[in-house]
Picture 1 (cartoon, rainbow, N blue to C red):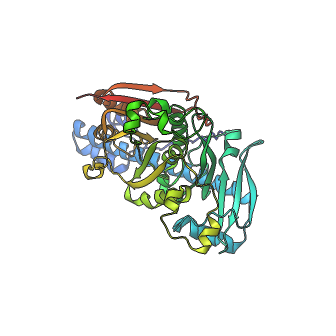
Picture 2 (cartoon, helix red, strand yellow):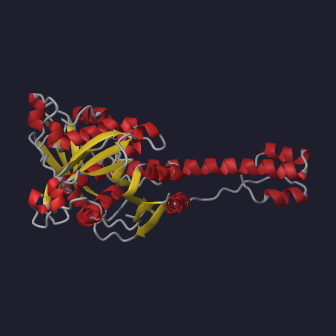
Picture 3 (tube, rainbow, N blue to C red):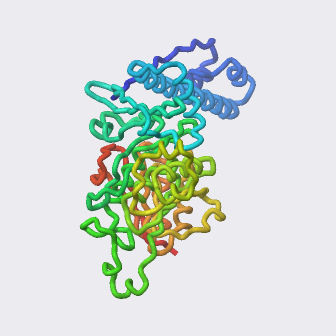
Length: 418
């Protein structure tokens, strides 16, 4: 879905000024009367500098207001689409708002309780299937069936699924097409962008799963059977290789790392982010991995609610890791480091490159998915990565993923420069 917006320019009439003053003010339509008085009182060099700063401030303010207005319009459109299709009663609506903000636990997801389905239309013949699941407490949760989005992929707006509580990604398949286990990810919109799922994470995870032989110490067998002792070399049979240490930076919901832990055997995945996102990541680990499920006490209500498939080929944990904070690096170095959509204007691309370097050993493989929308941060990041690593490759048109977002690329790096 493409939305075109136009803005109309406003003409500002200014008082008559001397010729040399007016020629300078022709470059700006936002100069105030205060600036005009300064032009008359100060010398030419001071006038240009001060008015230029004022112009820049006005222009930046107008630009930020425009971005905010577009964001509000997009949000209003999404809300209108959902309201037109699904009208819950007031009590359930209030419960949904409360739970979306609090999200105290993952016991909210219940396929054992009553549920219904709705389809959110986003254009001609475009449908996202959203299951409405109601808990025994009367709380309602919206669960997107991700396969329904993959079936049409008519839009790639980053916030397209911001208003659903959970996304069901179905069975995560390994590199041989064998099922690794079901993955259901909780979203928390109240946490901002870190609490949502992104195309870049899904694309990167599917790419890494398809190419696990590039980075996994002991790739899984082609017949989908578990790796057994006789599959090792004679030297490995005496001392089998330890699991591949994998870490995801800026995990947010944990989508990318948990996909890999579901589908790739013989590895341990650590999903990391800022402290305020650790609770969400931990909830998603608990919801999807039976190893963690067995370590917590479940009430009778929770036992009835947790009905999803918790099988997985590896395990995962969640913890804090702040870029540039060395005390968070104690579990490094790692064999594989990856991050999805972490090169943005909100973060320091140089600090990210150095964090990747500090967490690596000489054989570490690094994978970072990026969006082709912020050229300057990407150029800074790519330049610093080439300074720190021997080999840096950029892959466009990622054929290994079912998500066909055309604006996503993957940077692969290896070989520390000393």
